[in-house]
Length: 440
Image (cartoon, rainbow, N blue to C red; front, side):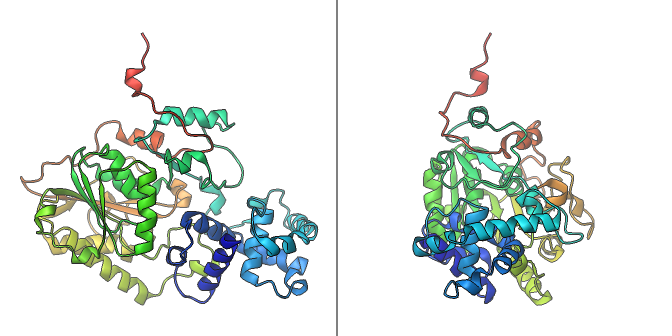
C-alpha cells in the first residue's frame, strides 16, 4: 500500500503545483524512488484515459471515500500495470469494480476504434508520436558483463534483437537491474558521458550528479580507474545515487553533498581534473512521459531564471584550470536553456574554449541561432525515438589542449550497439572480452 499512497501523494503535489515530478518523487522519502517515479509517470501518461474510465464506471461516485489521485494509481495498475500487487483494503475495494472497469475500457476502445491499450494514447496535433513509441532503453554495465551476454539472455526470454512490441515493462524488480548488470537509461541520456569520452585513469567532475546514471556511465568508460568527483545538494537523491553506484560495482567515485558553485576550482584536489560533465537543473521539457500536469510550457520568467543559473554554473565549470573538455547537457527543448546558454558563455570566454563537432552522423543538430551551433546535438521522440535532449561539447583552445576533438573511429557505431537494448532476463555471467574468445 505504501507505493500507491506515495504515488497518490506525488500526484496531489503536482496538482497543487508544489514541484516537479522528480523533486516530489525524490523528496517523498519512499525508499524505492525509481519504482515510484515509473508508476507516477505511467499514471500521468494514461491520465486522460483513466479520467474517462473513472467517469464511465462512476467509481468515484460509488466509492466516495476513495481519493481521486489514489483511484487513478490503483486503476492504472489494475488495468495497465502489474495488476495490483499490493494495496490492502483499497486494493480489495477497487478489485470489486474490476468487471465494470474492464467493460468500460472495452467500450472506450470501441468508441475510439482501437484494439490495443497503447492506441488510446493519442498525441495532441503536431506533438509527434505518443510516448509508447519511444523504446524502453537500457545501458549494459560493462563493469559487470558484456553486450553479447546480455543480448543472449534477452533472446532466451523471447525478445528479438530489434525489440519486443507491446507496452512498457517495469524492470525495477528484474534481476538484471537489481544486480547492476543493466542501467535503465534513455539513449539520449547516454550521449553526454559518451561524447565527453574521458580516458581511463582520468580525473572527472560530475557537477550535478544525482540520481547518478551519467555518473555510472562515466565510471564504466573510465573502467573504474581514475577518479570521479560527484556533487549534488539533495541528501535523499545522493543516498539513492550511492545505492545505485554500489549496485553497479563502481569504486572510482567520491560523492559530496555540496553546491557545485561553492567548489573552489583552484583547490589542489581538483588540479588534475581535465573533464567535466555538467547536466544542470532545467525545465525538463524534453521528458515525454510528462503529461498534462507538467506539459504546460514554462513561463518566460521561469526560463530566464533557469538560463541564468545554467550560464553561471557553466562559466564556473570552465574556471577549473586543468579542464580540457566539458559536456553540457539538458533534458530541455528550449533554446533559452540550450543554444543561448552555450553561445553566451562562449562569448564570455573569448577564444579560451570552442565547440566541438562531435558525432557528425547524429541526425539532429543544434538550432541555427549562432555560427557553429550545428556542432551541438539535439534529440527528440520524433527524430531519434528518445527523450528530448541537448548536448554541447566544449574544448579548451590553444597549444595546451591535448585531447582529441572528435571521437575515435568506430565509437559512433558502438553507441548504437551498446547503449540501447531492450531488456528482460536473469543476470549474465561476466566473460572475457570478445577478442579473447575468437576461435581459430
